[in-house]
Image (cartoon, one colour):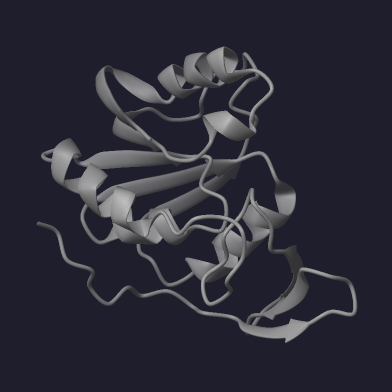
Length: 165
């Protein structure tokens, strides 16, 4: 069974906004307004989105001995952070510019982590391919889940494996 370990992340300080479910996430180099709802979970905030870190720990066990892994639909980067401690190279991909900005700030201390803004459902080629990938709590939020799965395939090597939850 996998256990959580200390991760080299930069946790933000949050300030509640007057708008419901919106917070200012204050990082050393940036302040981002984030909305805590069903589609997105932010570290240190509780909301309607499930905490999926246990799924990432399980995925890491199943995807060994991969050297590189991509977190497809990475959101805030919490799952990407979990993967970063177990794989040599990690990428996170999300279409939401706010989530991508948050993940980049949150993972700024993680060596060899790359966060990319891309639409998984688009037919564009992936800028890099990985040995393995994770697609966690993403398909239910998509209006085109089959296209997202096709897009996920483009991020994997020919023998790449995908963890889907």
